[in-house]
Length: 142
Image (cartoon, rainbow, N blue to C red):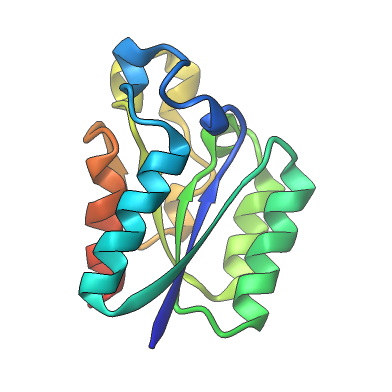
């Protein structure tokens, strides 16, 4: 059975309360529960991690790679725009990666327009709200 890791970076634990006009009202636990239901229908396993700390996220990527996971859904929050270390971990992991953003980063502040992750991802989904996670999950199960 395929295994997909879902990695959420800083502030994503605040979904549902942080700027709901941008990020919606669904909480991260609600999102992960819904993704778990979808994963069962797709006959894949998922595991989700959220951290404010870059090193924890890097270690999780390597853990999933070493455990034989098949893919990674990565919403790295602000680290998307700043972290060469996370980019390098994704490359070294060999995991098929889809970068996800709840909001359309290209309709926001200019500093959000650059991603260190997109060049090492198979796809980027931006601006679909939490539905972007479901699209990424379906893509990675192909």
